Length: 268
Image 1 (cartoon, rainbow, N blue to C red):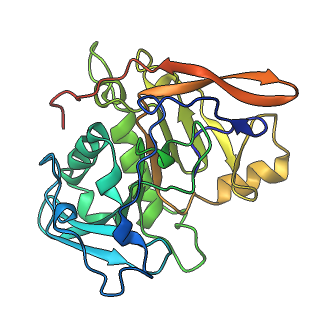
Image 2 (tube, rainbow, N blue to C red):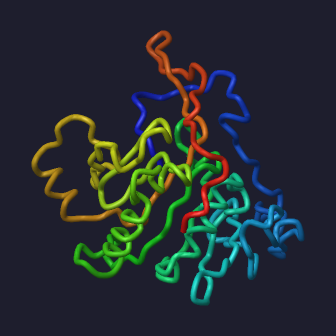
Image 3 (cartoon, one colour):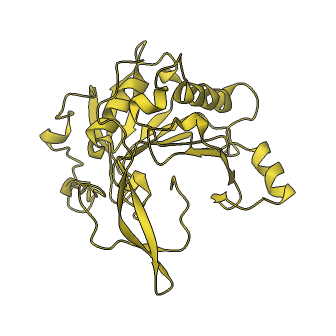
């Protein structure tokens, strides 16, 4: 899922691998050349020692396959972390913080790298975003009551947007630049501003996009009646692309630092 809705199709012009990284999948992710579904030894643990990996396995329901790390959570048990191997270290530190929360056992999983998100500003495609999965009902959307997936989403969002005293808010300390949940997206360009201060934009559940103009009443009703099924999408971007228009097309014109910390503060 894209965190930021971009006008038109943006073409990357000379992308900077440090500011717009595109991690390469392991060769073993190809199911046709890995019939035994073997996980290479280097992928069975976090090389940086940030996440503890109980087991490593392939999810072969997609092509390429997704590497699944079963990671321990607070209070016992594990949750699957999909393609978390490819996440940037600062994002894996954020995931480790999430797994230490008392509500972590309620998660149904963590989605890491999504290589299909290839456009600039789609941070799931460069290892700078994760989705914290929550339970869903059989209709595909979490319940709108104060229990189940909706309540867990609310808990996670409150945790992400929390501010204590006069110091930096949690989003600034851990480097969160966007939060999408319950049909709303909060987004900032810099960690100098807490995410909670951003004006939330409405996510249209029918078209899965951000409605920037005043939405029609029926869209508002639909959005208020349904919550985003995927869970809570969190972006922790270190740079955001700048755009310009050239011959009627939107192209990348460099990158802007988000001033977000690479290492978060010790606040859980």
